Length: 374
Length: 191
Image: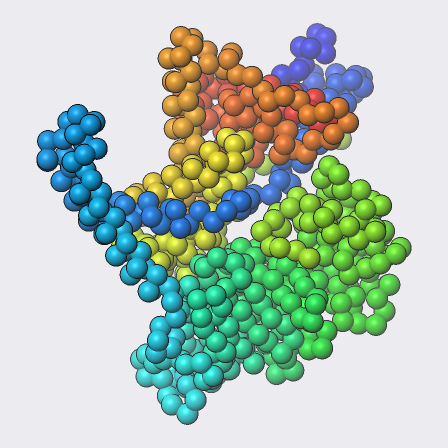
């Protein structure tokens, strides 16, 4: 047999589908054929690159408004109008056009009414946000919440060790306030909904477009980018954020971190957000990262982080490019390229010079596309 | 050391970290709550759009198919019994939406060119200028449509050849041949 006879077998071997007797034959051939070994190595590299492709790619624009209209068009009221067109016996296209004008007008009015109703629903409720007691007796100011109540701008919602509450964030999401927490409604408008979490824990599920919902904490502001996440703040004002869907940005005093799904980030009072890390990152990597972000022996900590970095940590390393300079940034770059090849047009010299466009392009390659990175 | 093939994973990890919250949203959406459906859309649109974009290699078509997938999901949601994770079910809806579109396109080509082998008419997009390194997604986009669909379903999404063959209306052997062809073209494009 010659090399071309093994061409298909290499793929089956890669997929683990080659029968055992043929495996023995192929492995013997590979041992003596450098060309086929090279082909097989190339196939393995392709498989590894495929496995590393981002599983999520956001559309370039928000599709929901258009989709929502199409959903509305499927509601019974619209079917009724369609049915009217059919029962009117409209056959020729010309007569359809002319006779549908009043129907189209009626449909337009119905659509306007629906949109007006929806628009009214998306504006903040005049009385405040609805709060429902989930467990125990949460308090708004000095009042106990029995069943449901309203949280107004400036008011504090407090839970003790035995109480929890669900807060409806206007019409854009929900926040569960866990025990021993203090949360204040700072402001609510069509363009911004903002709360302050002074201490405790909350879980947020937001379905609005990015950058509408903000949570101020003593050590950073969490900015929703279309997501679900959990946020904890301790009595010192230090925080921990874990993203379970979408993305969240953390900002403090010009320092920013973008945390994608299945990543976490620590925040420290006075220092702002640390560097995001994978939820499953090993403890020694997390410890080294915390020393780098908030400790004193930063060079040694960075060396340790780079030594421990895995393929799953490329988002972490990408953030470190912006948090290092000079030789440290070069070391981060050299580690990062071993784990994830930069996209075309992104060069070492450009990244080391702090080229923002190149960083953004690399961010897109890593799936951090919708985030308006700086 | 002998090569050991990795264990095939049917679908990537799609189970949300907040299953209770999502189950609640699914229940509400089944009762025709569009607000809950909006939340499900926000949570899953990136994943649905990714598979639509990779399989079509066309941004506007991917946006249309993403919307169609969610419209189908909205219509079929009352029939969703929770036998699988919602994300897995939705992903399947999205793939089926793309495949239906691909089959319709092949029927159209058959009508126009009177051929039983529309794949023979496929012309890959022009090669990039010499010296420009392709990234993998760009290279996948440059594959002929059927080879691209098979590659995405098998190597990216983890489907088996018999499933792909059934959905594309081709023989399992053809699916395998298309996969090998796709890999070979990608190797050449990325070289």
